[in-house]
Amino acid sequence: MLALREALIAFRRAPLLSVLSITTIAFSLFAFGLFGLVALNIKAALRTVESRVEIRAFIADGTPIEATSAAMGDVAAFPEVQTVKYVSPEEALKLARRELREFRDVYESAFLPASIDVTLKPGFRDPATVDAVAARLRTYSFVDDVLYGQEWIEKLSRIQYIATVVGAVLGLVFAAVATIIIGATIRMTVLARSREISIMRFVGATDGFVRRPFLLEGFVKGVLGGALALLLTWIAHRLINAYVIDTVFFERSLAMLGLLFGALIGFLGSAVSVGRHLRRV
Image (tube, rainbow, N blue to C red):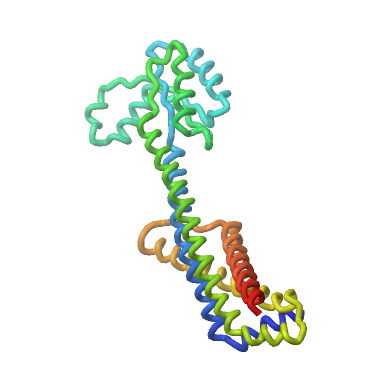
């Protein structure tokens, strides 16, 4: 309780410096939050595109429906497969006319073969797995051809890999910069009270007693800065939704993680700054 009272007194004693510290923490974490929001939406967009990965096995004309049904049962049992759908020649023709309107005249009298359309479960949509499932579909004697956009899937996989690597690197850079800025800000607070620390040490206060108010103060500033950063990120998200494009926002667990990250940075920044000063006193 004494440490909490000292931390509150410090806020009242130097309100401008406290506001500066909280604002600096907030804007540092706000920059990190904006990057996280961009990375989250890129990942969501890639996940949406990935969900459209589909393997289409064309069935030879005259194949008995019993053979097709038995094959569909076998394919549905594959551990990678999410859904299996039979598309009749009539359904394939309707689909082609609806999706390729500019070629509607071409499909007026065209004949399209029946097919088995296979979608894969999340986590099984990489090029190697799609190739393996397509190869198994080709083993059926009545399958004329199998199409799945191999080149497109390989490009999607490369984009996901690049986005993951770039996101991880930039995320670490943003986090490091935010930590440095926040640490420097909290160090200003400690230096502004250096005389007070010296007096406390002179009258016999232990290092733990001296540290506690500063650690609690840094923790509170980190939480307040994290909350302000989260609010600014939410406002940016709403403005982007209103004037640019629909985006997704952080889940509650991620938002809470952001607050904890701010609190941790504030706590560690205070611990490092106070520790350095105590070693010099």
